[in-house]
Length: 437
Image (cartoon, rainbow, N blue to C red):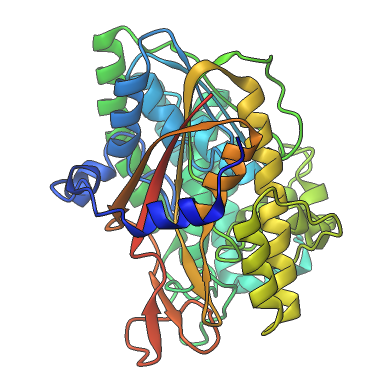
């Protein structure tokens, strides 16, 4: 039976905050443990949330899937719990981060790699090798900083062990924003004219050594529990398309979809895309993300650059939202419409791959654009129900650990700082939708 939209809206209106799902007792050191601080990533959900879901709804040996894998939090925590996991993401930087975060490396190998790096770096400082880059790299980086980054990067490439080299590349990717002209507090591509650049070698080694220390704990924990070789695989994939998984093969889905028109993930990671895409020898397929950048970012769910013609939402709530938004801003309403179309396709794939009687756990937040409530959680619940899921539980939790600003400008709807008097909390709460097949 198709659920009545008013019943869904009424159910959500009566939800109260669930303190046990806020995890407010955990400190930042708890949420960035193990490999979770390897690389910055927007709107990460905390590992304790994944732990609770995985422990409650699976057993060792089960398969956990995250269709919007992001930086791999679901995969890392599934591995720690002895569950196999698979993740999918359209972003190659997300795959690089996740592949690094899910592989605990023998500390001795990393020590050896660090020695190789230092020796190579010392030798390259004495040389004056000039590297010609993509013109957009010169837009984002000072020429003297580029020279120093080139030395760090070339020293990383001297590491022959692939796992160790990827570990170092992840650290390099993380510090690119610090070394660029990009305004550090901004999630948008914004130039900071007054920025003081750090020494790339110093900031790289500082972050690398922090990662090495975290890896030691990660490796020791997995080795002690006998879970070092538990599979955790991230695949580069558009999750609105047919996933490379068999029907009814997954025991649990834990995912947090991209937030509608909030974060341009291609823009956020364009520095890494640019730098690695400029190296066709070691990143053979990444140059297409640079050459076709503007078309590539349109593929991201939730991107404001994307529009669709086939507006089948499977949600009357979504139809009302898009209509109300169209009265104020046609372009913005088109972006929100494309988001709901994509989410419907993704939920369809989740239903297909999930075993009967198993659960899909979707963590999602609502917001407001131009005065129109964007009820993503309610829309997702209606879409999933219309696909065939049955609702088992809806949870409202306070958001306390988001990695970027939670404020929006009331007039423009754009993200802003806390000092802006015309501001409103964007994602004060989020919902955990527990839906069963």
